[in-house]
Length: 129
Image (tube, rainbow, N blue to C red):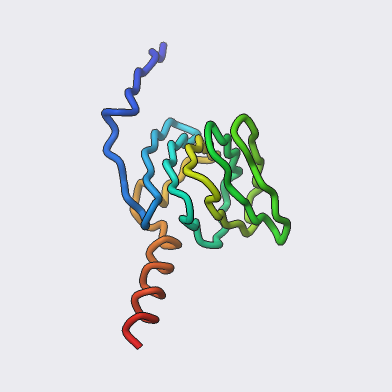
């Protein structure tokens, strides 16, 4: 019989993905749960993925662009993002978000989630020219 597993968020190494975007995540057999600490002005670049996503804003305010529709999500609200819906986020205030994904975010485990890296590389290219 399977037993429970206790996780401590503070014991999970934080990943700084881009300026103002810090992530910690836990993966189970069938889902991934993440804590995102987002600073005002940060941007999660437009991307899509196979995973269903539920983003719960614990504190702060963020503007989600999902499939061409803009939705401002405030503390105490959650937004559901379907599989393959193109989406991005603009952080309007310092914000703490808990994201849940199904199935597992294997790209995060493998380090192949490149949408943050692509934005950083584009910014570097623009500043070099």
